[in-house]
Length: 401
Image (cartoon, rainbow, N blue to C red; front, side):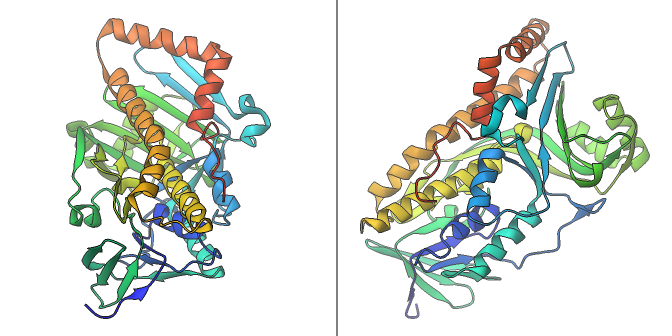
């Protein structure tokens, strides 16, 4: 191995979560390297909108704005309508119920490519972070006081902490010998952009069908991004339809709330699963984002967990540096894990529970489900507590960001 260059942090993975961590550490007197295996690719678009979009909750929007990594092009979600196809239950979440704390919106819809661009721009405007792409890890040597990493292009670094932010199929996680607990939902998520007859009015809609949830999410210019979760055979049949037939099926599944759905762009489908790494940390290694945990997309919270992973880890690193502590040591990493694990496990459990609850065809359960939704909708305090947790407002704000 060639003589390594000393850096303060090496992040493997230049997606939304890895870039969030890097952007949080810009202009902090650190030397940070982000290693990404590919150059940013042009997004695959549907009616001009990136097929890959995310709902960023308002708590995370505030943090991303605070570090200067928020894009101008984002569509607020001011209300959310959730209802059960098999019963009369419905819940309506309105940002007005959060008062000034919610800044007038529950979250924002953003194209993944736009968020990544904004984070890269923040990094390039500041000092201390180097983006290296296309390149990838070729070899890792674990030392007691650090990690040495050799890239495929022959670059070499030594760092006190290595961060895996390289996604659900993390090669770095596998290289470290960390397995995962995995649950395959035997479903696919279909994504596309549609143009409904009526403007969405910055409302997100989610209908729970027997085969899985269907979400219509507000985007710019009155367009909506859809995420339609369905069992494998149903998803394959939907993907095989031409646009006119697909729109008919979508209209039947969603209903008349937005009038006639006139247009659909390119579609894509991806398998749905949840997984949790058996270890979020090892000495000199931290797993963040999908490398650590992946959840069902029915509430759109997956990337929000990853953003919080990144921000809390940045907070721990900056605190440790202030006091001259070794932030790659297990004692410090265990503290980060303790701060993150309750949020991760609670969110994963809630998503698993909701998935099973709303896909059950047992009649008494459907009736109970509807009654429960009506109860929550009419219980102001309980609903506000749920909203504060879902939007990240109930979680402590990282101290040093």
